[in-house]
Structures are given as C-alpha cells and as structure tokens.
Image 1 (cartoon, rainbow, N blue to C red):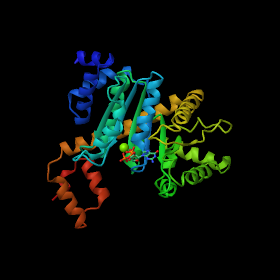
Image 2 (image 1 turned 90 degrees about the horizontal axis):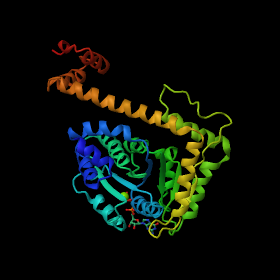
Image 3 (image 1 turned 120 degrees about the vertical axis):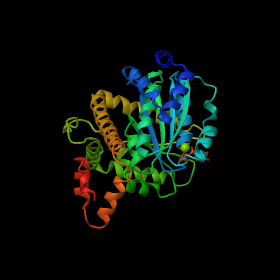
Image 4 (image 1 turned 30 degrees about the vertical axis):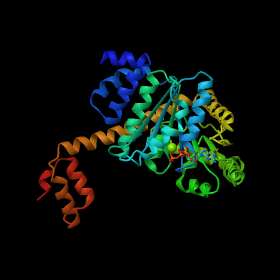
Length: 341
Ligand SMILES: Nc1nc2c(ncn2[C@@H]2O[C@H](COP(=O)(O)OP(=O)(O)OP(=O)(O)O)[C@@H](O)[C@H]2O)c(=O)[nH]1
Ligand SMILES: [Mg+2]
C-alpha cells in the first residue's frame, strides 16, 4: 500500500491507472490509499466542462488540454458519463475525439461511468480528481453532460465551471430553464462556425449584463446556492467586485478561440484568488461533500442493519393508511421495529 502511495505521488501512470480503477469500482483497498493521499491534494485547479449533449464538450477539452500542454502544464481529464454504463458508446467517441492527446505522457485521460447511484458517481469523481491532484496534474478537466441535479453536483466540485452552448438549438432558453447558467463562471458558445452563433452570444450577454443589479442578483444566487446555512455570505461585500461570466466563442474542432478561453479561465482563477475567495469556496465544497457522504453512509448503514422485508412492510402499511410517511421515518430512526405488525 505504501508503495502504491509513493508511486502515485511520483506520478506513476501505471499506479494512477490502477488506483482510478479501484476508485471507480469502489474497491475497499482504495479507501486507505485515498486517506494517505489526501494531505497531498488541493494543488490542482479543477475545471468543470458541462453543457447539453453534443455541444462540443469533449472537443473543447481536447483543445484546452493541447493549449495547456503547450504551456508545459500537466493535464488530467475525467469524462463523467452517467448515461451509458453498458455500451460505453460515448466513451468510445471521447477516445476518438481525444486521440490527439494519446502518447503525451503529460496528459492522463479517464472515463468514469456510473455503476450504482449518481450520488456514487459524484463521490467517485471527487476521489478520482484527488488521485490526479496528488499525482501532480496541475489542471484537471472534468467533462459532464449538463442534464440534471446530479451533474450539477459533480460540477460543484470544480474551481472554474465552463458551460458550453452551441448555436441554433434554442439552447439559451434551455440553459435558463435548467438553471445551468447559475453555475457558469465562463460561458462558451462553441460551434461558432455555425449559423446563429452571434445571436446566441448576444442572447447570453444580454442575460448576464442587463445592468449590474441583475448581475449582482445572479451572483448572489450562484453563491447563495452553494452556501448552505452555516456560513454567512461574507465574501460579497457591498462594494466588492463581482465576477460577471464572460461569453467566449470557440470552434473547438480547429482551435479557434481557445487562447481566449484559456485567458478567461485564468482571469477567473486570478479573480478568485485575489479576492481570497478560494479558501471560502473550498470550505463550502467540503461542507457539501461532507453532507453528501454522511447522507449516503447513514442510509447505507440503515439498510445494512434492517431486515430485508422491513421496508416492504413499512411501504405496505403506508399504502394502506395504517401509517403515515413521517411517522414511519421516526419509527425507523428510533428503531421501533415493533410498530410493524
Ligand atoms: N462545426 C463544428 N462542429 C463541432 C465543433 N466542436 C465539436 N464539433 C462536432 O460536434 C460533435 C459533438 O462533439 P463532442 O465534442 O463529442 O460533443 P460533446 O458535448 O462532448 O458530446 P457528448 O459528450 O456526447 O454530450 C462532433 O461531431 C464534433 O466533431 C465546432 O466548433 N464546430
Ligand atoms: Mg463528450
């Protein structure tokens, strides 16, 4: 085990590959290694890349990775694929789109598919990020389809979140509906070679820049959502500068606009660090993660210590109006198993 830890810390690709497999299989031997690696994490900058299917996320990740490699930066890539655990179809596609990167030892690519719950996927994604972080990758790109709350949870792990749109699909409306703009630090209008790109850009800009008051509300919501209840929103002083997400046009397939995107990400990183927000944001991420892990562990423990047919009986009683759902929960928590007749 100690060999494994030092191999990871030395950046051994074989060790990283093996540990990432253990992590995504949720193998028990991963736990002790992750414990030993944890003090060595917290150095990488994690960039979440999310957006509707087919908007060009993988192509962007590929171009971004190449740009960072040109600066000599080590790049880890995690493609989270919640949709196709069996066929692995999207993963195969990603391999093809990221093939320019193969053979470069400064890049490590791993796809993660869901095995069990999406909560499990968010957890293993965080662990995978930590493995790459400990192994010395400076930038970690995490691609995920922006489809639901679970994907939003995965994206909340990131330090800078890119939301990718493509012109012509009414995406700007979809994005507003899905609330995905609230998590965007940088908006990317990819496929700028397609008709309607400028229209999409101005629609997004209008939303973000209709005067500073609305931008302020947006940011307050953004961070208000991250903040649970323990911490006051003390980092947004009334006169503190506000980050307004820039809208960047790209053509991922030929690298157009990628330098601007790299700059926008750097600006966001500089802003966060100059404001001293990195420490506060990390505390919020830890709080969210702790709550998620606790919730899962408590349910797991409950399921393990409860007889198999117990829940079936409780459900039957609730359905037949002998028991109401809240009393059932109270009974389960206080182990009043005798309530079940
Ligand atoms: N014309 C044009 N096509 C692009 C551009 N970027 C990506 N594509 C193409 O769009 C298709 C989808 O690209 P991907 O990078 O796989 O998109 P994705 O968002 O990762 O897709 P999923 O992971 O399946 O959600 C591919 O055929 C790409 O070649 C672009 O800037 N312009
Ligand atoms: Mg993709």
